[in-house]
Length: 194
Image (tube, rainbow, N blue to C red):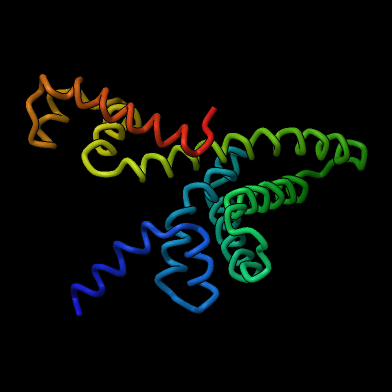
């Protein structure tokens, strides 16, 4: 029983979007949890980029998740899910901005035109960030840990600390880092990174 639960948890983390969507549509709670876990950073990154207050960013995150739940059966192409999530979050942020500001109709039109340009840029940025998250998840293991410690920690951890945490020789970190970055690069290129 425990082995089955462990296998199910490990499996959902590696499922494709197509599989996650199908399992969600069949009412599998673990698939829904895995889907939200996979895309929570992507969804939340949009209101953060719009510099919304934390409480409003949380509301938009929840609203996007509710929309996803209600619209999932209408999603024609599961591979388009990240873009759908980004666009939904961007539209919600634009509506939030409109509701928060008391401006003239012309200013609203100008703001919406700017919003559409900004939304396009945000969509591209968010897609690239999600592609990086997916590639890093595919690299996994020690390589993912080293890359996170070197490039995602602020400030980056020194080689000595990384070596201690991973039980490696300090002198091997640079070599391993190079191999790990090569693996990450291959993953990114396979996903269409430019």
